[in-house]
Image 1 (cartoon, rainbow, N blue to C red):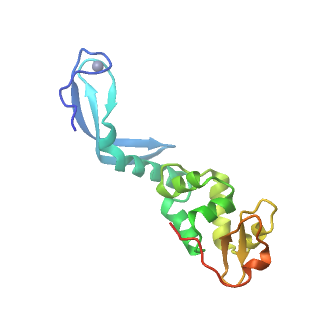
Image 2: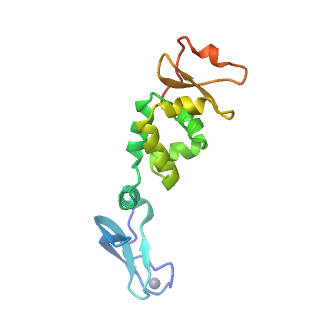
Image 3: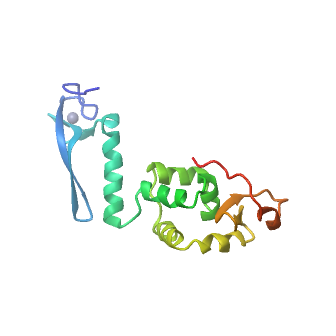
Length: 172
Ligand SMILES: [Zn+2]
C-alpha cells in the first residue's frame, strides 16, 4: 500500500511524498534504515509513518535499542529457555511473570526489564537456581533431579512424585 500523492490527513492541504531511508537515533547511537518508508507533507511539517510497511523494521529498531542498552535479544532468551528444556509456561512460572508476558519477550514485541534480563543471565549460568526456586512456597513447578529440568506440578502433588521419570510439557 502506498500513500503517495494522497491528501495529508493532518493539514488536509498538502499531499504526501514518499521518502525512503531513515536514520534512527537512540542514546547517541545511530541505526541506518535504508528501506524504512515514511511520507512528508508538501504543506505542513508532518512526517507520517507508513505503518504496516515497516513491521520488520520496527523489530530491527527494538533489537538495536536492546543492543545499545545491553539487553538480551529475543532469540537469546529462547536459547536460555530451550537450554533447560523448559516450556514457555514453565519458565514464566519460574520467573514469576505471566505466560503472555514471557511469550512477548520471545516474540520480541516487548523488551524485558533490566532486572529480568539480569536474572535470565544468572539463570543461564547457574542451573542450581532452578532447584532453589522449586523449593519456594509460590513455586508452580518442581525440579526433576533425574532429568535436570523443571516440570509443572498440580497443588496436590508432592516433590516425591517427581523423583521418577515423566513427560515434560511440550516446548513451544
Ligand atoms: Zn500536511
